[in-house]
Amino acid sequence: MTNDRDDDIGPTGRYPDDKLNPSDEGELRVKIDLVDGRVVIVFGKPVNWVGLLPHQAEDLAVALLTKAREATR
Image (cartoon, one colour):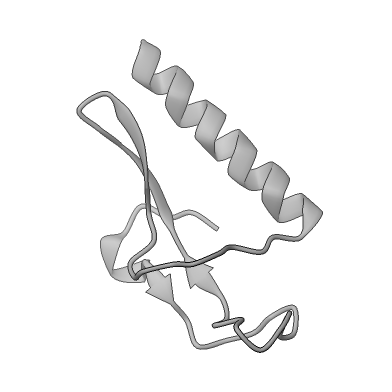
C-alpha cells in the first residue's frame, strides 16, 4: 500500500480485488510521508474515494499512526 519511491505512486491499471463499482479506477499506490511536521498522504492523482479490504484499512491505519508518532518525536 505504501512505498518510499515517488515513481511508484499512482494508479497501476490493475484491479487485484475485482472492480467494486463502475466508478472504480483500480489499484492506487500511495506514499505516506512527513512534510513540515504534518502527516501527508500522496496519491499521485486526483482521488474521489478509496475502497479498502479490512486488512488494507488496518495497514493504512498502522502506517498513519506510525508516521504520526514519528512526527511527534
